[in-house]
Length: 486
Image 1: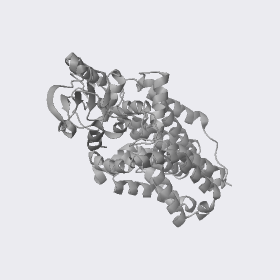
Image 2: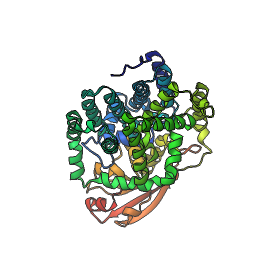
Image 3: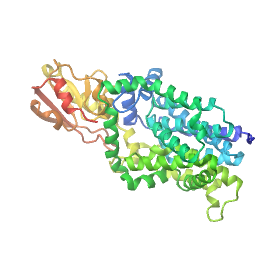
Image 4: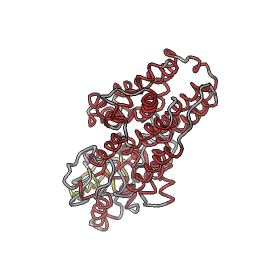
């Protein structure tokens, strides 16, 4: 068995701590991101599954919100820890490939300056936790290739079981890896009982979520089609690779990634991993996945590339991209493109309102909810008594749940549609959004205002209309079924 270089605990630890400090410093700079509000709301409707995700993120959000209600910084602690873990695992992967101190630092540094990892690490999201499970699985596979210790395969199954509670994407990693191992070797991997025992653990752990999906008509399958349609904001298949290039860390991550792929494909014992990385990227690109879906395989490529760079002197024309000045330049570029909220909120005042401008969607939610509260207070007392709030999008619903829990609020959007319907005895509806989906079920629909969540810095809810719907003629159960949408 090949002897590995020493693990550079001090140097790698310093990179990990630096990343943790930076993420912690900016975690409370603005406010909740829309999805974070939704995770908190979902946590307060805890279940074995949801229309758009497994149960882990809502559970974590509930725990953090219970520990420190209303603290965005505390809510994001698990996200910060996930990225710190990714930094360390990248260095450990480089070590498995024979990389000593420099290679381990190059791999750890690639994660530390990656726009994709830092942007998601700033937020509590499925896209933050899911890649860490991928990295851990690939680390265990690479280590198994070297040691043939079957306990590692069992551990990979346990990690997969946890990963499946955050997102189902890790199934794609295993599916492609198994096919790649069959064609490229080592086929011995597929004959190991520990591999299939680990698979059994993962399946057993996911049964409650699968039962929930089955009982609710498998909304996750429909959610996959919705994601594919929504991916047009990222340019669809055409924009998949360019955005993946950006998320990989510009020149640093891209160069290391290319070197890593070539290195994996050239080494017979690791070839199946290179094929897996390429296969996963192709699969998500064709299926209409989002570019960040491939984040989990990037540290594998960076680690393999870093080990190669350390062992073989790079060509002169790209040698500079694996030096610390290039890493510092990449880190500086992150400030220019506003990957992290290091600027005052007022700096976003003149930026356009558009999907993908994530930092603006951390601003203005309390003010937006205040407008909804004002609309409710303006109702005549006899109307207000039985009124409910219904929103056309799940972010607005989640914001109302968080900042105005006294208001009975509901939404037929996304996973929130499964959190319950308004009571049949309810009266008027203060509707936030486009009421087209339900206005036909009411005798009257009157425009009563709009959201103005901040005069200078607004999020995507800015300008959303508020309607008063009265005289419902259809039972809520029937109306909800026809209006519900992912």
